[in-house]
Length: 118
Length: 113
Image 1 (cartoon, rainbow over the protein chains, first blue to last red):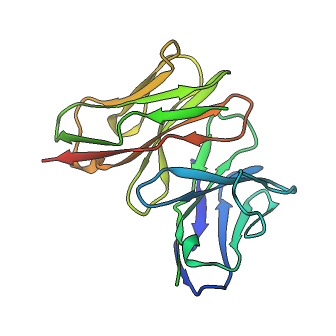
Image 2 (image 1 turned 135 degrees about the vertical axis):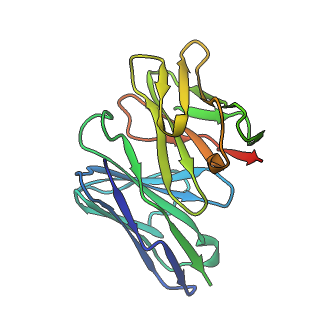
């Protein structure tokens, strides 16, 4: 079945530095990828939708200059948290859709990245 | 825009008892519906999905769900739960023709021995 690999699984960084999270579709081409943020004991909030080769579409309230998304190939999307602050600490999850319809794969999720900013 | 409501934030049940996790959605167009399970500090695993056809959908780990268009519901059921079913469960909806997947608030299922 479809597999999405997300790295790193955990990262601790100092306030003011930038962190990059990678999301790869391993056995299918993902023209569309999604980035979510999840606070403790809460649901997933969609941050942005990225389409291969074009700019990401950000949800209302998400700072696009702070959360940089790049989807340069059909198998890789990256989320860079720039100038991270403690309030950016959260669980970030990526998801990928395949090129075709929802039949077969649908939405496949990465295992998540726990970001802690100190 | 579509929305999803999971009516119970927490559901405690005893081992081997049946369980139902409720999900209602709102949309002006046809939808696809999903149930995911999340274990602590992990991503989401698909339990089942409704795309079209039979309204009763069977998924992994003995779970099933029934799509009820008139009641705009997609409740998740399992006839006999195990300790290992303790997790967070999310209902999600995607409007046909749209890209986004919108999640409900989640239901924490706790199985007591």
